[in-house]
Length: 478
Image (cartoon, rainbow, N blue to C red; front, side, top):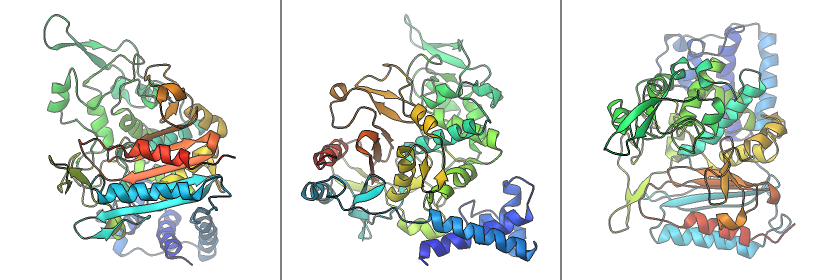
């Protein structure tokens, strides 16, 4: 039995105690304290009951549940299979160029460290860790390192919304205000053409869930016209881990502030998926962390994906770096903020940011993406239907983005190879995160690529483009 499986079973046993004692009730914070102390949920929460917890349900019934749970863990905890690169249609010596490129970039100061994982037909054909997880300690990067994935959270939360549609709990055509009443009357900041400043006008239509999924709701990250009001409300930037209020409270305050565009008029990148996270909480009756765990992470065997790391995972967290004025890598400071290490190990563990809050490993995220490539399933776990995956990975925004790409429900989608100007396939989909992470899925080539590093730098680094060129350059066909 592997150590990962033993750890998963231990967590399962704790969850079993809580669930057996709370049969018939929702798995809400009020009934999960014993679990919270030792598992993924708020490990800092004091719970008097946890110290004296006793397992009281009928023993045969409990054993049956435990055996079923053990089988489920064993199924989901399986590693992704590996494939011979040649059999998978790759040229090995060309794949090796990826490793040489990463070694070069981590040794010349462009990157602190990185991990790349490449899957074809559901199997790992290439995996590489380069550079350092932490430069000060000299700890080398490993393939199981944990990374802040920032906006790659958006794809996961978008899947959560579509799960709820498949449950019959909502429709993406619904107005957001049906679930979050604060959004019943939103406003837009309109720049004045003759003088400085802006006017605030009412939105000409209600924001829908689909507007949020496609980033056409007009919600930015607190800048632009009306930005002074967002500054005053202390809602700017994507970093939420320091907040002392639940994300629902933050989102309700957003609804009182002027947005950047009329709903449906243009692509505006910002807090849309944070609002969706609050909506998932409202509709499901769970906090976002819990819903994602139950409906996505646990079924897919994503054992290292969290909003806030448990103590036993902190040593695997990669350190964030930036570049100084001379181009040298420097460690980002501790503390809260977008250009710091962030409080993902020591924060208040209250605010679950649906737009930028998750941490994960390349392998975990590859499992999630392989589920999407498979049409919504991985192994025995069915997360979405093929029809929903097809809807999510279709363009919903017309030509609002330009450059040969469109946007679906949580993913950028390639529409025109020539206009995009980079190797790939029409229909490939992906996105990235603020710590310089990126991913893409190419259904035509049956390909998943995950690339993680931890860099917050204003210096341009061309590693994303080079990685894409090297991956497609290594394909032999078939």
